[in-house]
Image (cartoon, rainbow, N blue to C red; front, side):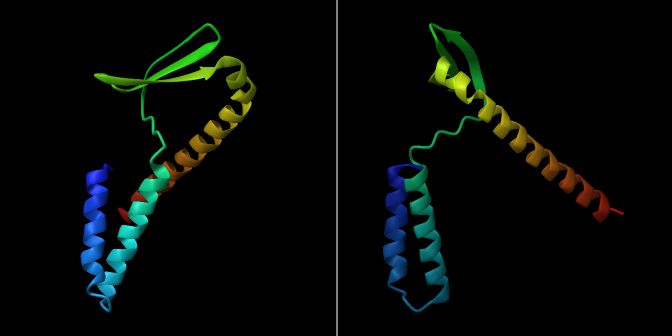
Length: 115
């Protein structure tokens, strides 16, 4: 979310606050505040959906991601990455198991609903 959108949300909030006693206004203000706070918290968070390439050189692991026309690069020190690798694998296995269970539950529910 860019600064222009955040400014619009702040302006909307200012306008809505003039309504004061309306339950919808209070709800909208709460949602706007939550959205703005989440944006501030997540501003430095990078979400990588797909990697474009992985390679290593000179003790560093390079992870290229982003749009093919506008790529970005993460670089890890291989020594430190190796020390943390067991934890990475544990978390990935755990997250994958949780997602597979979620998919299975969704499929089972759909089958039950259609019988």
